[in-house]
Length: 258
Image (cartoon, rainbow, N blue to C red; front, side):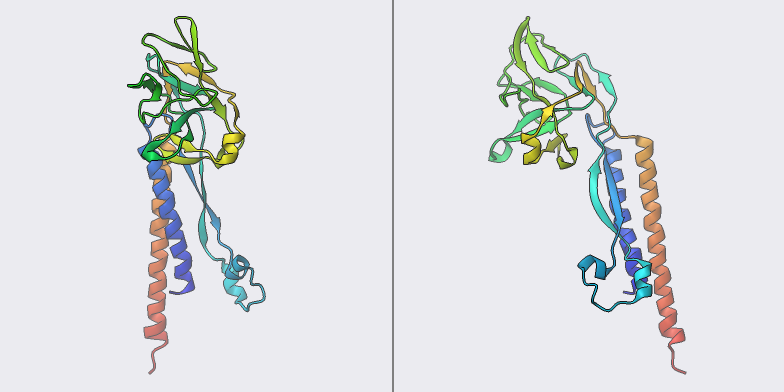
């Protein structure tokens, strides 16, 4: 494969990834608490710079062409989604910065802390406050589960749960100093690293009872990114075809021996 085709191929691969990310965002347009991802690319360094082998011989003109593009880490956009009322006592929406804390002990694994903004909550079969979608228990400020009795409840903006005027628990409502350390697990859950778990701080947002936070995906923006990535794939594939035709002429016409 010639150098021009390699450059175009890098454009195809990165554009396909951008298209996948934008399509996934679009598919989660109606997912409660979903935060869209931002695909990032960067210019790839030439071989000598990438490998730190400046003493090796190279072609200056080819190096000026660059080495194409490559993927950079995908980021998460934590923009606020629309808060929509539901009328359900156990639904909560986070307005502003912050996360609820759940315990994930699925598949026999040890207890693991997860963060979420999906506030569709309910009373589980064992009487604990859980996420409706995953069944994982919501934790209080001391990382304990929260038992609920039958009857209406009240949840304050700080996460204080009361029933019949009696204090039941204070939900853990936290934030992390660096959200880039959070990784998506699926089901609206984020995996914090060790520094995020130990360094978490009180959230600056507020909890709104009887509401949920809608997806933060901008459908127009996501659709435009899908279309833009598709055009880039097509353009780079066209360049590969041009390179093939040029190579064919070089071999069969210019290089033909009379």
